[in-house]
Amino acid sequence: MNLKLKKIEIIEIKNKINHYHTSRAAVIDALKIVQNRIGWVPDWGIHEVSKILNLSYSEVESIATFYSQIFRKEIGNNIIRYCDSVVCYIKGYKKIEKKLEDILKIKTGCTTIDKKFTLLPVCCIGNCDKAPTFMVNKELYSNVKTTSIKKILGLYI
Image (cartoon, rainbow, N blue to C red; front, side, top):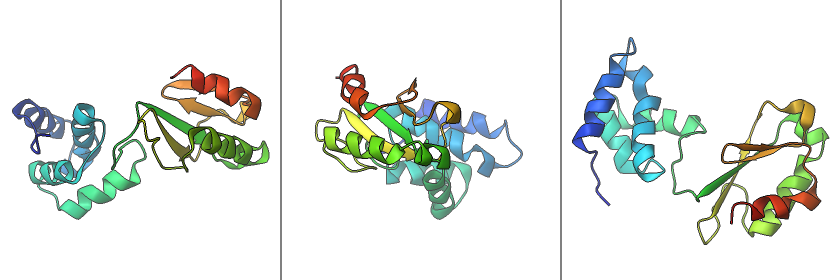
């Protein structure tokens, strides 16, 4: 894997800086440029972004780890995000989480061995009136029952 950004990616990041008052405000856009190429942001990507934006490595790293849409480790082809908000808790998200972990044979935050799925919690998907809920990539599933999860995941195999 090339451990440097391509020239066009560097230009794209520098162009993003022009959209903000400070270079720090462009960090997420810059990290997304790295992530778009390889699917996640490795340490060398953090280092490259920090150099271009003239920020410290730790400052870029802190933003990368805070923002849940930036992945700091390799992810699967399909990202499952289940909602663990208070409403989903009341409506039984724990059963959904357990069923997903059992079917995928992974714990939350992990990726299946075949790299097909990554399972992540999300503090709110914004679908509280239809809880419990989860997403696979950009597809939203509402009023999820444990009995329907295997069928849903089958759509992505």
